[in-house]
Length: 136
Image (cartoon, rainbow, N blue to C red):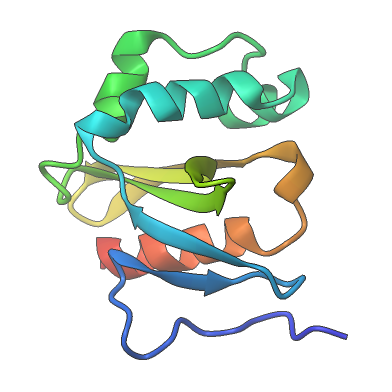
C-alpha cells in the first residue's frame, strides 16, 4: 500500500522539484516557459477527447494562441502554468499541466489535465497543491 500523500522533498522549491507518485515512480514539476509551447500542444493532442472535455469544456484541441498564452508565465501574479514531466528513452515528455489565471487579487480560476495513462497517480493533487502554494 502506498501513502496517499508524499510531501515535496525539503530541498525542492515550489517552482521546480521532484515528485514521487502514488505508484512509487517519479516525475518532475516545473514552471512552463514559452519554449514549452510545442510540447504542451503535443500533450493536449495526446489527451483523450474526454480528458480534453474535462480540461477545456470542449473535445477540440486548444488553439496555438491559447497554448502560447498558457506557457507565458512571465507574470505569475496574473497567471502561471506548471508542467509535470517524465523522461523515457532519453526524451522528456509532459504528462500533466495545471494553470491558474487570476480573476482578481484574491481569487483565480484553476484548470489541469493529466495524460490518461497517468491518471490516478496523484499528479492532479500535486499540481493543485503547488499552484495553491505559488498563488498565495
